[in-house]
Every structure is written in structure tokens, then in C-alpha cells.
Image 1 (tube, rainbow, N blue to C red):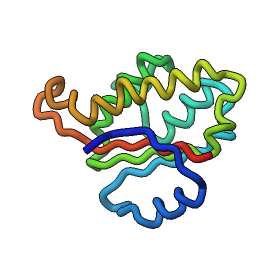
Image 2: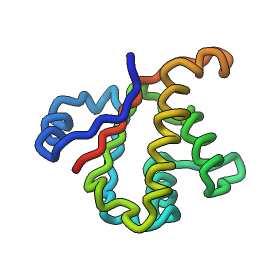
Image 3: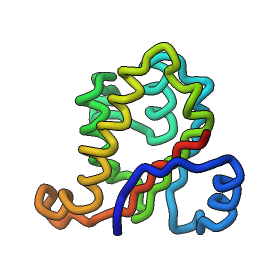
Length: 135
């Protein structure tokens, strides 16, 4: 298993969605064209992944985002797919933040679910996690 970020076309996305077994896979699809700011991104991710801490809130910053995305114990699926449609249009005036999102996935979230969870979490289990960027 290799968790990764993959760039695909809209046609490839349609083929992917047809091929996924949605009974065993947690699929999140977001529209990048509707995400102008980091707060927009956090809003969408909070809603799609039900991100929150035990008191029902979270810090709404990058560190808190990473912490919550490397938890996800409330999602039973061992396979996660995140599809970001219109990735080119996402955070168009915030390229640094867009790059930060990719770095967090590439260097923290995806490696965590691929292998780090085994040494960090008692009885931790790996999850297949793929991020698709649709342009």
C-alpha cells in the first residue's frame, strides 16, 4: 500500500467513482472552486470528515487539522479517498496555503495512515488513503 496524491482528469475521476466500492471505502469529494480561503477549506473538511474534539470544537489551524486528520477513529473504513475537484481554482489567491495543504497530506497525514499509525497508536491499523486532485 502506498498512500499518495494523484493528479487526474475529470474523465479519470468519473471512472474512479464508478470503480470504487463505496460500502468499504470512505469517499469525500469537495469542490475546489468553492474554496477561496483557508477558513473555507476548514469548513468543508470539518463538515465532510466531522472534525471536532471531545468538546465539539477544534482550533481551526493547520496543527489541529493535522491532528484530527490523523485520528479519524469515528470512520470505520480502511480505505479513504479524498477527491478535490477544480483543484486549480482552489485557494487561487492563497498559493502558499494550497501548497501547505499538499505538504500536510504528503509529509504527515498520508505517511501516518500508511505506516506511522502502527508505532504511534496502541493497536493502530493502517488505512489506504489517496488524495485525487482533479484539473
